[in-house]
Image: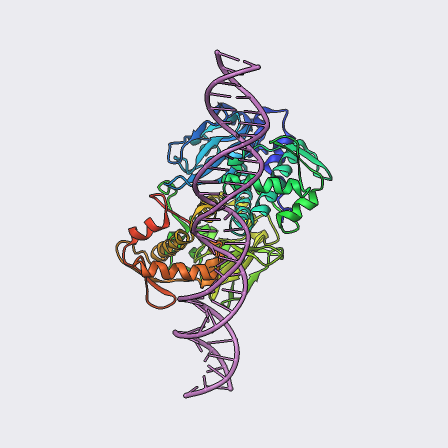
Length: 251
Length: 251
DNA sequence: GCATGTATTTGATCTAGGTCAAGGATTTCG
DNA sequence: CGAAATCCTTGACCTAGATCAAATACATGC
């Protein structure tokens, strides 16, 4: 499943970490000329943990890429039930060319730095620079795959499987950013609060907490502090996640 | 939310129904020259209701667009739990340029006719014809939005809301194909079996059946035969679906 | 150090929806 | 027409996870 698409956005991010503009996966294939054009229309915005970047329905006249920190996309029912529908880690892209209002609430989960491009100017660049559009298509298709894996999780997995899946996803993405292969023991910080996890998984935060405790009791994970976990045996975790062999590129 | 992207794939389908090749939303903006190139690499495939088009992981060396009938994309856990992750109605697109194996099981729910394009040839056309890629990006972004609305449904809606949502979605898509606005009374055939609905909604077919009965008892829908329903008051249905005002372009 | 506030864990209970099982209703095919 | 196969409905019961409530950890500012 993953073999064919050569590079994931995260990976590109790491690859080019010495050059600020190349942090933007979307322009990974740009030459210096093109980067200059992008440079001209870019600006940075930063947010504190907990701040809202935009509300669903608000005008959003830029597209952006996460430089550091974590943001979430979520949807809400009028009575307040909330479902996360996107998790943005460094190098992930937000915003939709061709649409001028945000479709989801975008929230900074940690302190967040985003590199933004004015939308209309970005659209112009897309017209003259086909590979930016092509790259965006690849990224969107990856996101669609992730969303569909996520749908399987939401619709059919048990609470325990959901938690195991999420921990595996976070471990993998963390490892990807660090360029460490997830072999054997893996140790990392959970970037999400219990509440955020519950929004991600479509369950309550109490159930999240209980299942984490259960996985700890059963030796699937070790919990050093509330936020720091170690996975003694990654394969065991994957098994608990109920995933198909190859398992997720869930964003 | 919907205002900005000008034309949905379904709409294009209807608009161009006199020209077979234009059934393919992806080439809606092609000129005659370009259509000719597409014509050269296209072929048709048909399937009977219940047949599998491809299994997840199988080689798939074409991309395709549904001409008539209905297909589903679904994912399965090893123990057989199944989640539908895509519903393909006429004019919808399947397949991913740049990937050579199917990521999901594709199944014909009804008799199905697909218009296929050899993948490598299609990719070549994409390189020389930017607007095909652009159109594909638009369509993919629409699908991603649909997937995310679907995630909200799977993660947070009650059984009753799920059924109401699904009926609303099917009614809307049916209406879109017929170019009839869903005002007042709407009457149509459910294109899915109870089991397929349960795969869509992440619940059991018994619960699907019970909730349909409940909505009938409460006068939200009228059920003429197992498969034919009438919606006396569309707004009432939307309210039952728990949706935000604007409500779904759920595929 | 102490008060205040927020995040997390854990317990006790309840319920929506799953599971198991039995009947109807429709279609298909002889 | 009747047998067989599907598909759908309904009932009785049970469990995973929600809900309500309390206790515990961990910060932060004073």
